[in-house]
Amino acid sequence: MEVPLPKLPGMHFQDPRANVRRKPQTLTYVNGYAVPNDPIAGGVESPSPMPTATAVLDSMPTVETLPAWVAYDRKVLRFNAYFKEAVTESYEENHRIRKCVIYLYLEDESIHVAEPKQQNSGIPQGVFLKRHRIPKDNGGFYGMDDLGIGREVTFYARTFYVVDCDPFTRQFLENSGVEVGTPMPYPDEPIEAYRASLKKVRSGGPPKPRDDDLTRFMEAKLGKASNALCADKLKNFIANDRKVLRFFCVWDDRSSLYGDRRPYVLHYFLADDTVEILEVNEPNAGRDPFPVMLKRAPLPDKPVEVDALGPTKTHSYFTAKDFKVGSHINVYGREFFIHDCDDFTREYCATKLGYSQPDLQATNIREPEEPIPQMELPPYNGFGSQIDTVQNCISLIPKPPKKDLHKLMQNEKKVLRFTAQMVEIPGRTLTNADLDRKFILQYFLADDTVSIFEPPSRNSGIIGGKFLERSTIFKPDSTAQYSGAEFYVGAKIDIHHRTFELLEADDYTYGYMEDNSGVWAQSNYQAVLARVRSLGAGKEEALRGAFIQMDVDGSGFLSGNELEGALKAAGMDVQKQEVITIVRQLDKNGDNNVSIEEFFSAFGYKFED
Image (cartoon, rainbow, N blue to C red):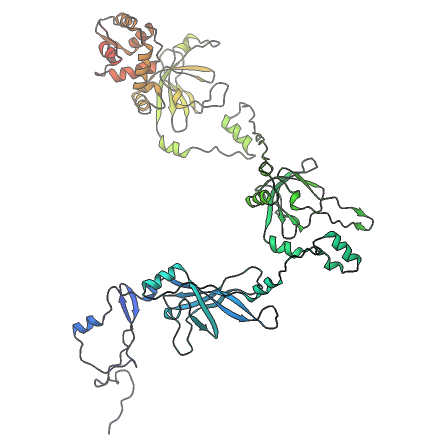
């Protein structure tokens, strides 16, 4: 007797004789895309012998095979069709032709039917049948083989007649070997035939009351209802529906208190001769956005008369002929000036109303812009610096002035150093002690500040040290600062009612100015060379005499001061910085002396004939 083992962990064993019930693989990857592979019916298969390698390769899909949702992605066949809709209880028509478009999506053979919308049709149109796979009555689903020109297809008991297709569909079907028929016309609408039968040949009879004032008067006198004698507005509505004249105008109300000059857009609706005026919301206008200035309604062309019982009715309104570019219209006591119109309005007025081109030219209404008043800074009062005065005027709570951080980082620790001395100018005299004083002037490129240091001198009676704290220096009687280009050897700088002349500079300063010769033109050797050549044109003899006179020891070399004296003796006004540039360029030995022959050869002169 067999006793079953309890179903506890470690007490259950799998029968090796039982069939293997693994789930089969349902996906096959082709070119990186997952393709469904139909499993074996029933999901279970008894053990079978191992297939051969040839059979496996033959059963696999080829490399060129792609899934339909990849190969036919965004490829849609489009067919034009129609169906007949029965119309009951109408003597005008017994059926109606409704035109549709059938879309067949090739990726999954789903179909959706759309009906193009027609204006004023009164029929809900749009998506007629949502996209899905439509089943057939006898089983299966509709596909590409079921659609074609001249065929009839029935979707949910609604029969569609296919009459045409688009070029892409025609080309796709021809490439697929499917015969495509010729396009077929749509059948005639019964309502159109009925309307055509209503048209009668004019026999020369009396005009209708809706079209003639005299006939309308006679009919009203005979007792006909007034609503039947009104003008025919339906004809005008059908002919001019969705046609709007657009004019651009302005209303200048600056003559009144708190008035302003404001732009508007005027719309004239040709369907019912109504007018609408919209306000243009300008940026920063300071007004609430109320776009509608005048609601759409007929616009009276005359002032409305008011009596004790209220406003009197008027039947006189503006028409399309009353609006012209360059004219004024009165809108309930407000004068609007029309200065332009759009392209459709311009074309309509030229063809329908007979306006000439000069009458349709836009008028320039742009007024000259008034200059914006600038805030004037008060003069410097002597307290603090001028920058502090400016900050006090800009804001109620003064803030530190903003610094150019890029300039600070790029020119950090870059300082131009010069030796300087005080000089006399007209109106300022100096003592002998001040004339002998020497200074070291430093210009900081990081923030354009200047500091002056006076080296101590024995027995001068003047204590040396810091002469001027590092600060921003302004030009005399101006708020402009001194720039770096104004500091060079030979320049005169006015600092706090004292004039300093720059005598020399260190090697770093000379090198920096030569590297930035675009700022310091006196250190540009090529520019100095051209300038000296132009100044010395025709003065070769004076140059030779001046150089010989300056060369006292007859060595053939001149120092910087001697070269400057020789050039000035020859009548050439050169700056001291330019002379230093020439010496630094032509000095080969580093002794600050220039050979006379090298100077003449460099400048194209001949020292000896």
